[in-house]
Amino acid sequence: MDADVLALVRRSIPRLTAAEARVAETILGDPTLVVDLAINDLARLCNTSLSTVARFAQSLGFSGYRELRVAVARTVTLAQAQQARFSLDTTAIDPGDEPPAIAAKLAAQEIDAIEKTALGLDAAALDRVAHAVVAARHVDVFGQASSSLTAQDLQQKLSRIGCSVSHSPDPHLALTAASLRTREDVAIAFSHGGETQEVVRAAEVARDAGALAVAVTSVPDSSLALAADVVLLTYAQESPFRMAAMSSRIAQLALVDILFVRVVQLRGEPVAIPLQLTHDAAAARRRAPRR
Image 1 (cartoon, rainbow, N blue to C red):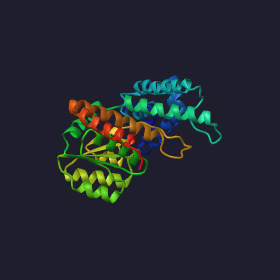
Image 2: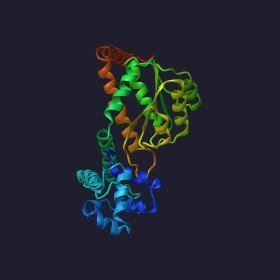
Image 3: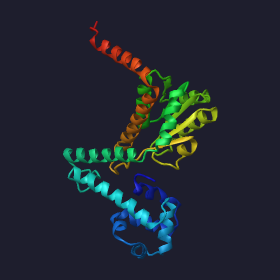
Image 4: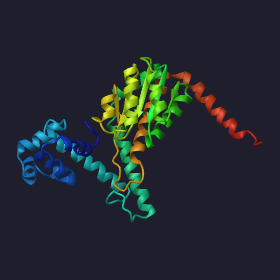
């Protein structure tokens, strides 16, 4: 089940009936209502029937309203604890916030993204990807814009332990590389919303060529997720006052770290040698006198 049930509710709205959408919007408007109200009270508030509320809960994957209520209560409690940790009334960034408030709110948002990504981790899917990376002849990493930074981070980590891995921010070069892959290869594609067409296309081409296609996204029914063999979900809610991808990038980086550690575990002792060699090379470069 989704680590953040409110994100699940938000994503469900486009496919709901009008009556079910009223239930979703009421929950998103004040999640504490679900914690406090019995099903008949919520139905009355939403001007709908008990069966509609029950059907809405089941459409999200819950057995019924009781299970939905517990999940929302858990999400609300986590959010309240996060705000209390930083003495905040809200984590939403306001244009008039001073630097201390900005720092506290961003810290709360990013810690929340890491915690939810870790709690929502599909261990079996991650293990499948890690084993595939260890056995792969070559790993391609795809990502554009802010997701390109995450892709570069994974490329750098894997290259340090001797993996054959590449990433190109140029979408045309990414497609060229994807088309040359085989069943011995792995393609890992990053997109927060899962709709970056250059990334989706690269994943499709790599999958069609035979590679194991892996999607790292926050939207399980996105185009990228549907184009992949394996989906690794991140959980992040960006602030409406958003200058760039923040929480989403942090969530992706956390997932990259988890995957990398698992790959290192599976490869075992041999990774110590390339790690030491790359460390020594960098250290020697720093000590070298300037000419």
